[in-house]
Image 1 (cartoon, rainbow, N blue to C red):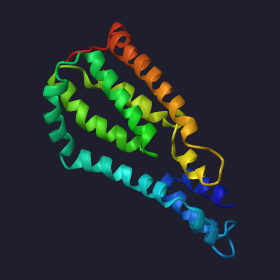
Image 2: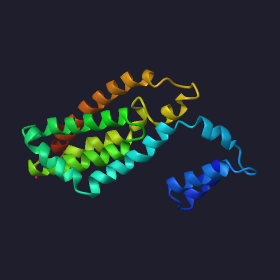
Image 3: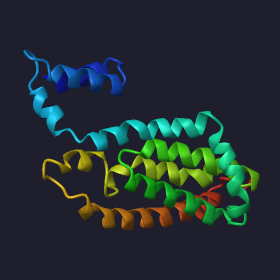
Image 4: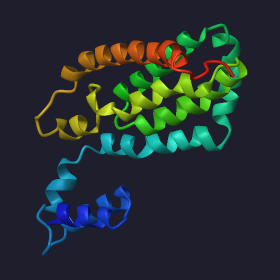
Length: 197
């Protein structure tokens, strides 16, 4: 019942975050709810929940306060000598690693990398769309990279052991980093998208 209500609310235009919170609360109500609230709060992994709540806020901190620009100014001399492929590969690999390590951090990792690497790419004369496109792609398929929110939230119930997914996650990240960087920096210019500004 609550899941159906959430789907109907999202179909009517309610965004996913409020709909999930509203119907999670409804699921724990005494008469309507189907989940005993004492069991939910007793078995809820609060460390994972806190990480899921704070990572998007950290991404906003980097993008809206100018902290990302300040870090990119500091990093430009260090990574300024990278070619376009290496900068693209570095950004997508780092984004994927952040997503694999931090729970549900795809939004924060993407915001962080966009805020830091985009000004560096522009200052080096590279097209930031082609440099950052693989990072956006890797953050949109975070669910296949080892540790993620579903696995971590269910770990306490004995369904998964987080270490079982870490190595395959890193292998997947490396393969996607290499292939999407090659496509973005080598194949896309052949299709007419300029690599340089």
